[in-house]
Length: 218
Image 1: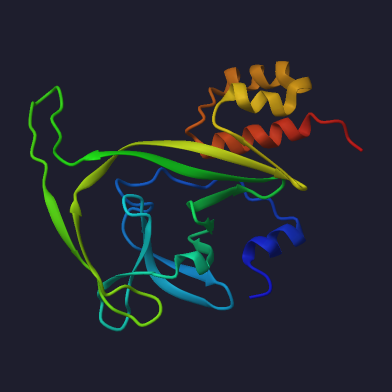
Image 2: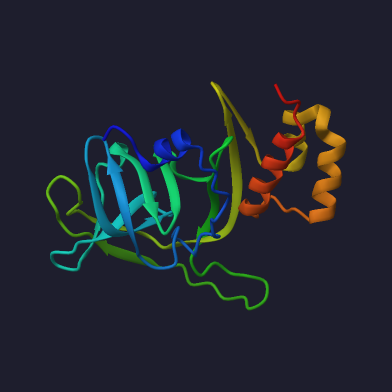
């Protein structure tokens, strides 16, 4: 694969702004989504979903309809589905929410044991489950894994702003405004007027583009 969709978008100057959605439960998507997955050297189109609990990319095998797991996840470069683009590395998927400048978000999750006691009902029923994983030579696991059930209880975002060779991480306004210190007064006003929350990826993408518009033109 010489050029991915992300590379082509940068080359032609298209600037899509955040279209991401909040991850659903333990998974990135609400149900399996048809996606093109770019590996190092080839690509496939399958129904997929990413599980935050075990940090695995699942897919439905079109041959037998079974749920399977991609075992060579380290070879996945990019995933595209329904107008959304995700870059992959050993930390999992990062969604591209703006192209110029390049801005992407990583969805971090906090988990807890399923059924742990909570204040409003006092119920506690920690359980275990057996996962049966199908087999597909090279790309899927045929192992069995028995582990405690866990569930996602909170999602929070980290953002990376990439400009040239510089990559800056931020997760709140105080960190963000340091990247545009001279434009800080205007940015504070913009955030207040628009009611921007840093859990809203589309709003953060708009904030970044506004900040860029305030920079001196070369």
